[in-house]
Length: 410
Image (cartoon, rainbow, N blue to C red; front, side, top):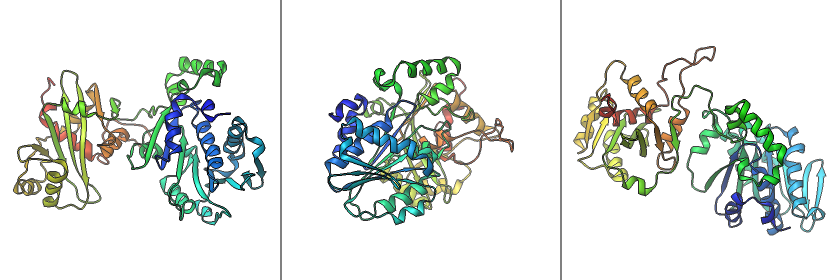
């Protein structure tokens, strides 16, 4: 069977990209029935047959979950391709071997990432690595350790990640998916992207029943949405690319600067605000650590095109830093502050209809706004208090819009 006949239309552009090895990493996320695992297993099986030196290795967090999940998924893909007779299945250890060449699809648990150092191949190299149910893994440190072992000496390879996003943005997988990296493609799909006949009427009936009974659970389980724990400060975010056409429409723009050294960074933000729409765009950032004020000024001029006429509103608590920046020719002024100003500015941001953040232009801003949650008591109950940590971009944006949010009519 032609593999295009068993790949959903939504995945066909990604299939072509994988064929030409357009990216090093493919982050495929979504809810139940979104076909991400089916797609990856087909691409690996096809890749093994197309490249006589290619091998694959597939990881789950816990080894005893492999047989009934990714192993059976690969068997399904090979069967769908009509190639079952060309592969031999081994159960101890779990392996799938391509008979004509001896190429292998191996399976491992990540209970101890150090065990990956002992993996050896008698032929070829690992071209494909797949982390299934990524959210079960402990973090990117374990993932990196495995990749370093698997891809040692390999010039070009592909890593697949598949997972259902956890409900809270503070989970490491959700945070990592927001980070823009060269060679990384992130894609989100749902069961609504699958041909209905592939999933069957019972699947759709179950999804509809959950939607009626518990809409938040439906959005998380079937749509793969990060629905939150109820403690997120900003529920008015739109994390998406901001086009050049949009930036060309910006009139007055606003710039803010939060001072920092180490471990707290200095953070610069640029925004545009449309009061009639109550919509805020955050489209530029600069974040540095251990950067002297003179060097920071030079970075703002060279990298961000700050001119002597552009006003930057900064934290007024550091008068010397403001003076240093002025000495470098920048128009930096201190924000108007007072009792309750942090809460007032944050509440104003919460009141907006939409805060649009470009995750490629402003990855740190997107991450901080998305993961910012109210303080909790020891018992885990949320309280109406904003934590003073991991909020450098939020502070910079508050300063940038200092004059705007202090006008109550806006």
